Length: 261
Image (cartoon, rainbow, N blue to C red; front, side):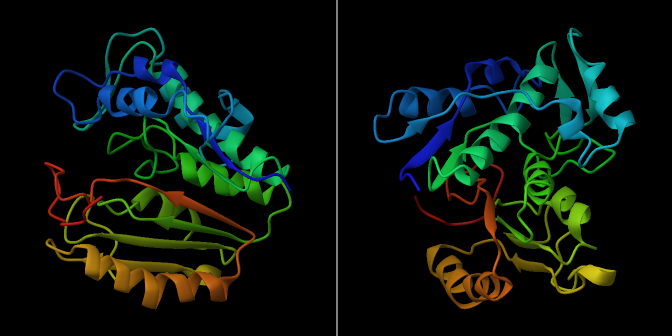
């Protein structure tokens, strides 16, 4: 197996513009492009757009068609938080496909791990609904794709400030996908209580750690050391995906956590 860390990032995702003053703005990705675009210690991998058959691993045709219909239109509003611009359809397909490119590189032994730096984000998107800035559920698509490529058990760790309602709902009945979330609670989107542990055959494969506002480095380290890491090891996944939102940072204007860089 080759070593190194892959990074996938593409300037075309800057074209997704949800509107003036929106917190999920192109600068989120632009600063990463400026910082990491030419980093020599990373393995740079080209992005590709996810095709409809890949999107359909999670989302029904009607949802894919709704997002596709926004292409070329100056503004389409999916909910009060989620709007698109003319190039958002292409950016969303690139976001989903970029994560698949990283998965492909890891499975092929080209790298040990990787980052897909993408927008729009994904973990709030439900199977049939765009919401919370998210059009397609990128990490759910990656997990579903991995299961069609020989990976029997997948763990998803989501440390975003907000609970990943869409990701949880995609796999809450699947015993072969472990979903672990640390998040501020109660807070948007309102899901992620500790007693949400999965349903049916998937009971026990969802772990929610709802944190009150004000938690910082010590509380997060303890949670990951004493709870998250042992649970993931016991699950013994063949692949680990991370929804790496960084809005738990104490400087984030929308959150209430005290995590430091």
